[in-house]
Length: 115
Image (cartoon, rainbow, N blue to C red; front, side, top):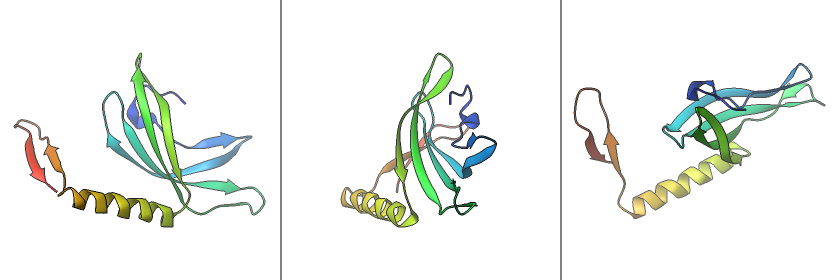
C-alpha cells in the first residue's frame, strides 16, 4: 500500500470481506525520507475463526514522489522473540556506553542527552 501521509500507513489487510490482518498498535520510530514504523497485529485464523496470537513487524519506508512505499520489513512472530531482540539491543547499547539522543523542542535549540 502506498500512502501520502505517514499517519495513513497501516498493516491492516482485508480479503473477501474478512479482515485478515488486524492492527492493534502503531509507533513511528523514525520520520523523514526513510521512516521506520513498528506495528503490533494479529492474523485471522480461518479454521478457528478467531484472531491468532500477537505478532510484531518493523517496516522501513521510502518517501518518493510524495508517497511512502515499503522498502523492507522484519516480522517478529511472538512476544518471546520481541523480548530477545530487545534484550540484545539493550545489551549492545550498554556495551558501547549508551547513546546520545538529540531532543528537539519547538522554539529552542536541540538538546543532547545520554541514555
